[in-house]
Length: 146
Image 1 (tube, rainbow, N blue to C red):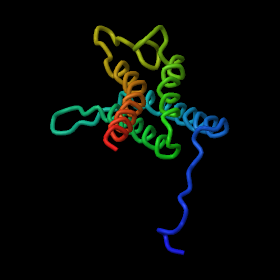
Image 2 (image 1 turned 30 degrees about the vertical axis):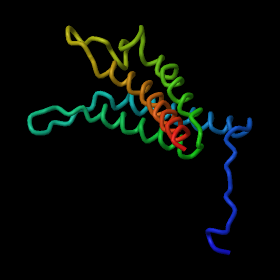
Image 3 (image 1 turned 90 degrees about the vertical axis):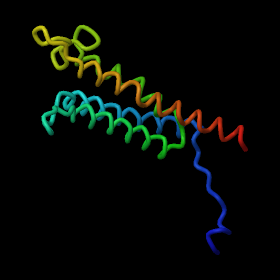
């Protein structure tokens, strides 16, 4: 039997077991993402007289890869929404008094604002939702075109 003659297999993405598995995958990646991004968000690399925010770039790249992986592995946007929603909840113990402020991520050091703490929170929350939105837009444009 050639490849063209084999029946197409459909992956179940809507049953309760599939949804629970998708959510579990997202929870694990959200935990890893929060710990990784919070612990590396202040890393800077000097290059050509500039201080590149390597920790923020690495965190953003990790969040994009995790989001694309979740969508590719499940074929569903649910785990992306779980990842984005849980990110803020899981980061809260590190934030202290509020957005951008706490022991691990202080809002201010002396008189200097610590924008990297605010940026990492935005990246953790926004990237999964942006990718889910892009997937939605692509699916809608394909359904209208075809």
